[in-house]
Length: 283
Image 1 (cartoon, rainbow, N blue to C red):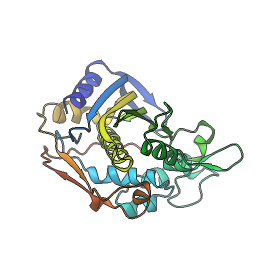
Image 2: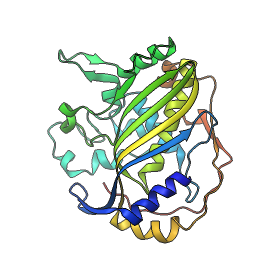
Image 3: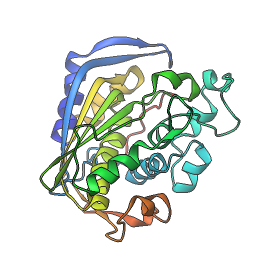
């Protein structure tokens, strides 16, 4: 929690105003932020200075693991996070690549599970990494990237948290995740939860111990209409102890994650928080 609040304070004190063409709003912005999550000791990075809703973040990442490209499939998992980008983003609504209502295009999980090779055949990045880690192999290229420059226009949104690199030291698994852009009041806790959970899940299905997860953000910002709430409501609050994440130990393979796993297989214990804060969301 302290590193999260330190980043918020850094943006408030040292951020530079930058206009954002997509949203038409200004953002108070800093470049380069590094956060670390202690997965080994189950210090689940759920924000405590406002009530945070962790289930939607995990549901969204399950959808990425499954390669979903339709907001309706994400809703079935338990999250509406893609409804707006799929159906309210005017650039995407006008795109010749959009197939219809709820279509997201070739974003995130599509790239992770069905990257297109030059001959048009699919490449499953996630399966390769799972196979290697399960065998104790780290070829220094255990990388899953959702950022495909050749297909950016074929999706409703460029990926924000775009690349995940797994590293093995003995039988301990580490994760380094890279994010190009981050809405800190709203989006960051989603991303924190997903980085943490991705390492915890990959360690569990590959039979490794989870170590630390490293989260690197390039452009960290607070939107102009979020700033007053951050300064006067969230930052003055004292953080509370972090909770723990419990994952069903019956989840043992990637096939499990692709098929029967639901939000009922995840539980958070010991979560205390201050009241919610209704930050504006920018599509």
